[in-house]
Amino acid sequence: MIKKNKKISIIILNYNGKNLLKKFLPSVVKYSDPELSSIYVVDNNSKDGSVEYINDRFDSVKTVSYKKNYGYAGGYNKCISNINSDYYVFLNNDIEVTENWLKPMFDALESNSNMGACQPKILSYNDKKYFEYAGAAGGFIDFLGYPYCRGRIFDFLEKDEGQYDNIIKTFWSSGACLMIRSKIFKNSGGFDENFFAHMEEIDLCWRISKMGYDNYCIPSSKIYHLGGGTLNNQNPKKTYLNFRNNLIMLAKNDKILSLTYKIPFRLFFDFFASFKFLIGKKSFKHFFAIYKAYLNFLILLPKILLFSRKYNLKKINLTYKIIPLEYFLKGNKRFSEL
Image 1 (cartoon, one colour):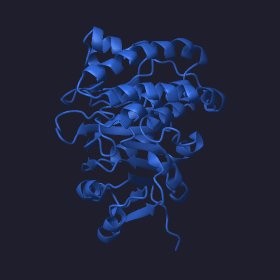
Image 2 (spheres, rainbow, N blue to C red; image 1 turned 120 degrees about the vertical axis):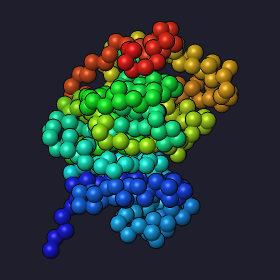
Image 3 (cartoon, one colour; image 1 turned 180 degrees about the horizontal axis):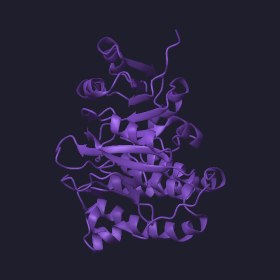
Image 4 (tube, one colour; image 1 turned 180 degrees about the vertical axis):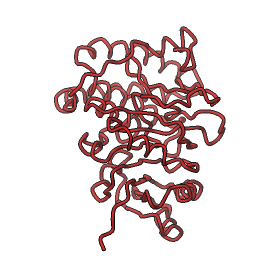
């Protein structure tokens, strides 16, 4: 008898996250319908016994092990060649899922053929009354490419009072918990491995939008995200990757003419952000990380413009709002105020 593939593959990327797996994997196993989904942990060459821990305790969880750390983008891209299903759920290893977390997203994708990807409502694990930074209730980007969310603008997190419980079309779905049609993921080229980590999901969602598909947030699906499991906010490498990757994403996907004035505007705002790091609680290392990000971006820019703009099938018009102006000058910190 031929074993039929499950409709959904839940894929958890891991790197030295044994303690996180101990804490969060049990909820994924408990609340994921085994008739509908399979669970995989893809390990990026952990040295903390992560794989042995899973194999000893979770018979239903399959493991895929690599001999090097391929990062977020490379780790996911590499594993899908051996994982077949209609849908992939890319799930961080620091997420607690809730009962019936999977079915609403699955039903939404099944009922809307134009929906390419979606995310659940993402709340903070440390304070479950508030939205979490990485995705909240759906992601957007402003005119200059700065990302923001329903429920989170820059570092300001809103309290979840049901104000964003409606299903909505978004610009991007969070990589903390991203459900996507497998064919679309493969046809889009997957995650850009030049990113290594951070913002590759926004780049992916921008590309699938150009392919004619939509992103959504399905708030009836709810999860709790710890955040900072791989790189916390105090790590200058995270600052570097966030600024560099955001610029790469903009250069890959926005209109060429727009880049001629958007990049100088970005330089102006990011210059002030760098001094905010310098005089604030963060160190000179974060200040330097922003300049390093720009230097690396400028080195990569010719290659990006020549070889990385092949998914420009449909023009996507961005909002004319500029989030730094809304936030710092107008004081608009809530999504509903924009």
